Length: 120
Image 1: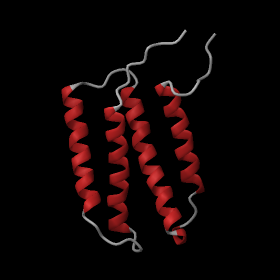
Image 2 (image 1 turned 135 degrees about the horizontal axis):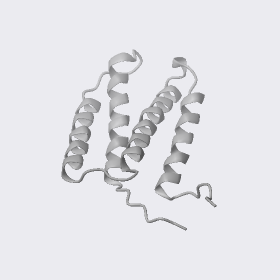
Image 3 (image 1 turned 90 degrees about the horizontal axis):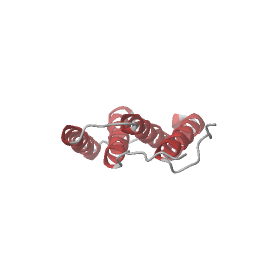
Image 4 (image 1 turned 120 degrees about the vertical axis):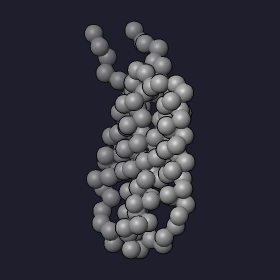
């Protein structure tokens, strides 16, 4: 029997943006191969502010907090693997790609986009 899952998409997207922008901000400050840019920091502040405003207007219920956390981690590990692909001298991106794909599969199951294990 399928349940009607009430998972809102806006906090999930905003959490993904916070993860990507947070990792990009950290990378511009710590990776010597990257040129400094203030735009990831501006995007991080705006995305975090919008996520906070979304949380204040409609509280997160059900599986929304878990899906937002998964989306945040997908953003962090996804940008990390992209950065390591762009600058191979930083090291391999195999582990971050595997973690990103595993988190994506888990998020797809939670959102009902993929078939999860059948109970019964």
